[in-house]
Image (cartoon, rainbow, N blue to C red; front, side, top):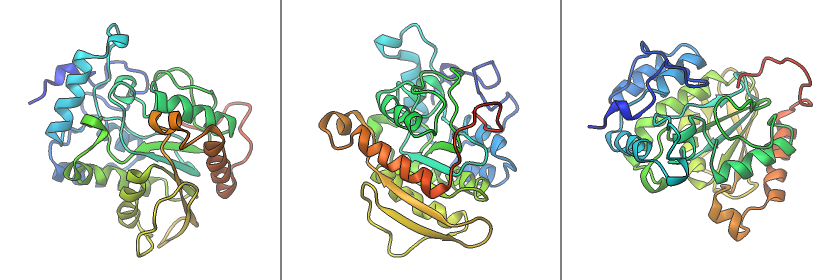
Length: 283
């Protein structure tokens, strides 16, 4: 059993921590399903996600990493907990990744914040008018997503960046509930990588969308129109190669390719120009 003291306790002042000491904790896949379904709001859902302990292997790994740390971050405190979705409360664009990085989101408490993939990703979002700053270094650094929200298929950093199928499935109700919370204004989902693309379709169906059959093949720039069953408008799912170090170093994905995807997502979503004053965006 992992030591809960190796993670930041909820409600102790971490910037943007959505949970408190009273937030209910999921300790099994059945708990995740029940707590996700009964959250009642996006804020409460994020709080419950951020204290989940349903997958023993992932809990043990994320907290071991938080306790040992990387040499470059030895003096830093690691978040060491699941990383919830963040950004606009009613996004027009949802950006879906695989999972937090062990020394990125698992350290900072914010998905794609503080790692090399995030450096490339946020620079593109900023150029496209979907982020308020060109980088994202730490929770509380002032970064805001504009008309966009960012989340992951698995909320804990997995060993080797490879969650087990059972861990993916146990985490799935968090994503389905998050999709259901943002249905009204959501128009585009950008899937960063094949894993996110594959994991999304069952959760779209669980959230009330008419997911196409057979499942569409992943590809960079691929667009699939999805019809909602009830509330909400038309939805387009867009594929994008993951901005991992391997992909960016080899040129599989470039700045221009990312800008093209996010520029297209912005057009499809009908995102207006970025605000210049106070806004209702949630960071």
